[in-house]
Amino acid sequence: MKAWVLHDISGPQSFVLEDVETPDPGPGEVRVKLAASALNHLDIWSSLGLPKPHLPHVAGADGAGVIDAIGEGVSSVNPGQEVVVNPSVGCGTCPACLRGDTPLCSTYQILGEHRWGTLAEYVVVPERNVLPKPDQLGWEEAAAYGLVTGTAYRMLRRARLSSGDVLLVVGVGGGVSSAGLALGKTMGATVYVTSTNTDKICRAIQLGATGGFNSTNLFAKDLKQEIGRGADVVLENVGPATWEQSVRSLEPGGRLVTCGSTSGTKVEITVPHLFFKQLEILGSTMFDYAEFAAVTNLIGSGRVPVVIDKIFDFGDLPAALARLEAGQQLGKIVLRA
Ligand SMILES: [Zn+2]
Image 1 (tube, rainbow, N blue to C red):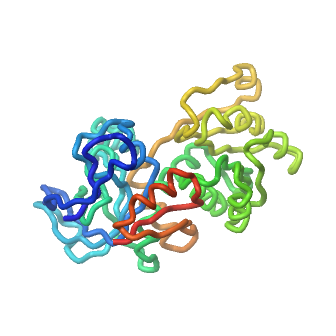
Image 2 (image 1 turned 90 degrees about the vertical axis):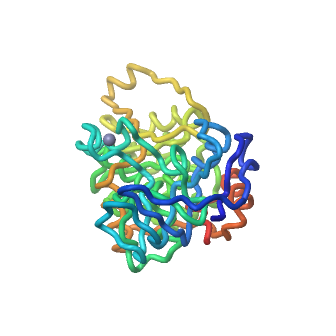
Image 3 (image 1 turned 30 degrees about the horizontal axis):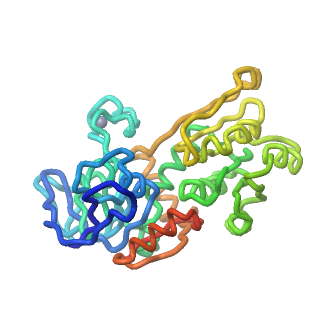
């Protein structure tokens, strides 16, 4: 099969398109012929060795396609079935998996990080990691929503976002953030966004945000001036560059939930501010099988739009990665087979 293969980890230019042996599905696994796949920052981090993958490596967490082979004992799907791929792989039997904490599974894997992923013609995953493709979704949409929408869904669930809440999405350009905006709206929240890019704020408002603020300003003050209060939930994955303002944006009793920190890894917390206001800082990563199924239902029913930035041909990965690296996108960058 054709695949974009990493033989070294010197950055996104390390991806090489070449022929590799097509993997066979083992017991309990299925092979999917991919119709489309989608990029995530994870792919860039893998190419930089953060964390270092076992080389040679095929990155790519998201994809959709047609089952073309099944391993021994597979009973829930058949060859020819159109599916979306769930990139969050747990064993399904350890205590963490049994209580729905797949990301804390003792043998947890992210597709494209810990096992070969979707930047290829075919991908092999456990049977439980495919779901029927919702009929009304095109291949590009089906391939695009998985990782970011699942991640945003778990974040908002952990932060107990309720109808009527004010949600502030910090740095709305990224895939998780734009999915958070779409999900937040569907869950009945009033959503505000921040970005350093005015065009992205305008686009977010077109997608349902009530308003937006420039991230380089004191956006906590701007939010409170505009609506007379802070946010009940802040979805934050920028890190040090916005952290202080994100925490200051919270209402008393508010929750900040984070799944990443693209601007660095260390932040400061003013402890009295934390306890006097009874704030909560929540970490979240990826999602469990029930959350992926819930998100697939929401997307499939049309209640949550899939935000696609741009579609590239499979052979144009370097240009697609360059767009992702430059942070020009709002929504998902998709590769079409
Ligand atoms: Zn497990």
